[in-house]
Length: 532
Image 1 (cartoon, rainbow, N blue to C red):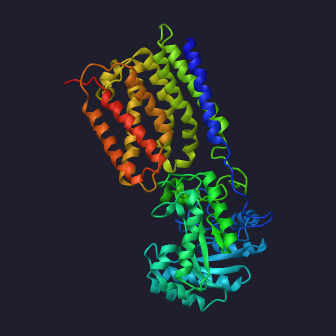
Image 2 (image 1 turned 90 degrees about the vertical axis):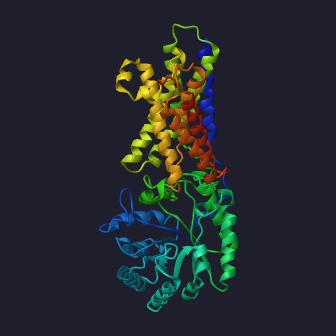
Image 3 (image 1 turned 180 degrees about the vertical axis):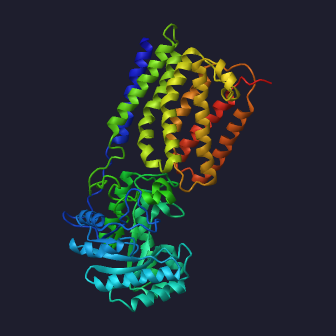
């Protein structure tokens, strides 16, 4: 008992220290803006919550846009919009109330009838609010999407220019300007998108500003005499890694401030993407797509202050407390299961490993539930992950103390056999099945459709490590390895072989998750008890 209490105290101290380290504020460079200085411009879309531009009947009320622009006027001189329908056409009039300028978007899709409606509305707005609208942005990434040719786009731009007095531009990812140089002659200035996170070769946060400057200089050299405006630059605060590009609050704050400082030194204009988080983008782009805002999409509060240190886990105290509680429950299950035995120190080390696996990571798992869950399916998966991360350390620790062997999958999936098993063995088998199902669902998703898939390394590690520890610390049941165990282990191994090089060694989220998959594959490889 005394050894167990010492191990519990050590585990609790490690958990608290770990979360204090994770939650420690990350220092930032000096504020890029002087007191009272505002952003040149920032992207704005008024959709909140379940609102989406994919709903053809939606019309955002003026009061909602008014509330947003009143808040944004405190931090920016301008907002960039992307279309002129669905209520967004009300933005210039409302912006004028707060002294805001507008980069007014005209959405082009290559469908002539719809484009004509957008152009007509945009031209009308530009002529009605010439003091508010800085420029018309005619088309956004229409070349990237392959919906128009460069020649057709240039013709459209010239037609719009002939009808308005404000400057006209087009916005696209930088490389599409180089592929379609004929478009440059049709605009007053060139608007390029540089998103280091989304580059074909993702750029880490520390190198993002240098990348932006290199691309800007490349475009300036390609189009001498044309002003180069950065129409989109930013960094996500949450989501999956792409190679060495890690979304986080601190990285978002650093990238944006580095780029703004660079823009001030080199005297170029920057439109930051974006004002508020955009939940509607998560349907197409996963978790990362919905977390590019400088302001939280739910609370509408800024995620960071210029020049101030930023914590990636501001609620770390609560997360540490939750981790310690899970560690206590894990040890309590072990104490209860082994209360009549003389427990060797080796078993207490196993229980400590289980408690640490759950205690260190349960707070991270819970934190990601709201971030990574969109739609019923992902909510169910996230809740199952948290349940597995919570229950497996407890169940596996009790099984270690009583030396209950892992039941074969055939027995777990047989109702008749399961009824004959004791409750602890049945619970342990259920935890194994849940871990396998969740792991295979995640692994195969990262093999066949990985671009927007998250890496749920925290809950899966918390669920898998106790099973792995049990496989090492408890004698195997007599019998053979079952076919289901073999298939599961092989699928996980093959997935690892694909995922690691596909995500590259720079992606620690991928490496961590694959290490957990490997531990589960080894656990399955060791399970015995199947009949001939």
